[in-house]
Image 1 (tube, one colour):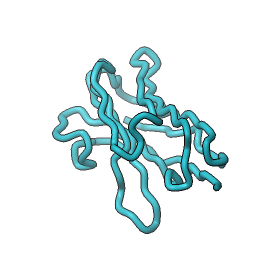
Image 2 (cartoon, rainbow, N blue to C red):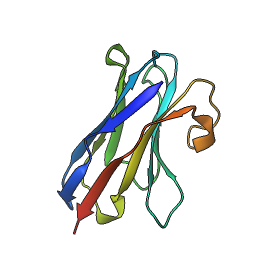
Image 3 (cartoon, rainbow, N blue to C red):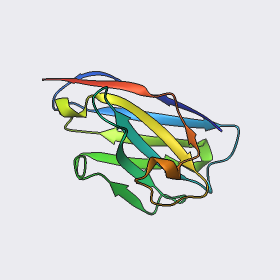
Length: 123
């Protein structure tokens, strides 16, 4: 599976961005998917996850109520709508796919990773 993350950019605090993660090479309709983020000073951090059907989602406390994860299995694509962005949301955002999963907040539960897209929130 190849994952291509896109949609990052520079935005002012309070603004919004929508990230996309397009999968190719294998269908994702039987997989769990997730978003993680990383800065140079921190380990990779869980942001949000979604199960195969989209019926179950989990969010990190730091983004709950501001971010929304979704997926369109027909398009082999996952999304992350980010609203009310804060400077502390600045990071490289990675998408991931897992076919045999454990805890979806654990990076080791995922089998494939995208290359990352930079999100920068200015104050």
